Length: 358
Image 1: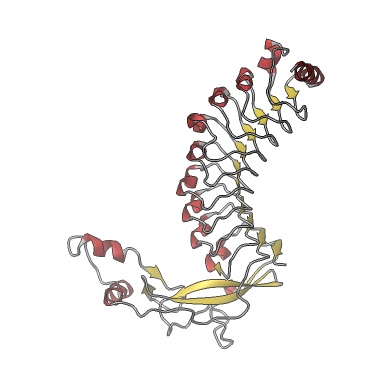
Image 2: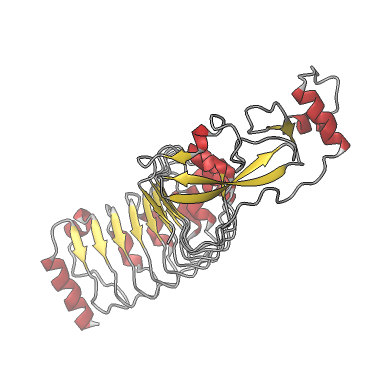
């Protein structure tokens, strides 16, 4: 212990006025008796990375004005309540430890964090406490054991970077699309099979990493991401040939009636129909073919069209049509009207500076 105390004192003397670097000292606890009260009060950055800490030392809470804390590469399996007293903490780096969803204090969500890095731990779920960090701009949980993304992710409306690569995630919840400032979305090295079309609402998205997943196609709505500059798709079983009609179930009588009402603009009023039918009629989707005035509800034709990205890459995009008879501008038929598909025939190079396929 004396050796550790001496090392802490020496590190404190060597550090700057607002920075304390106790990294790589082989510490299994933290005794700060040798650090003056003034120094504790003035410290803004504290480095405890590359030690042997099994839990966050309670003495960390003595640094009341701390803004940055790095506790990476330890043996941490728990973060105690003391961290909630660090009311000015903005950045917490805790990667490469032994933390899981039960390791955080109940009031962890009361922190005013802007950057949180829990990569390289043992999380199987994203703790709900993290979904209360409303000022969070960067969240990293790569290299864990996550199987899903909670719908509550939409609460993090300040988020700009979401890094969830290297997990076991199978689906992207549509709630991710409710993050207005999200610019970087990293979901590589998972088990994702499809991309929800709602992602078209991510108007700030610049980089989308989806490599090494199980994707066979992308939604056509991805063309609406006008600020997307980087798209990584390598290592996916993307469709290699055109499939005209993948599935089509004949519409039910309910759907036929709903299509007739919507396509012919037959007026109806709340007092005319039961509430369940009113809700059903509100679910109508317009056929993407501009020459077709049709709509669909549950029954549609799934069709893939290859779109030229940046003059180099042919990517399969999924389209939904109202019926097999509908002539789609998304068709691969060479006799289709070129003017119909001109807006989707290619994505200019300035739109996507990097498309990574191989």
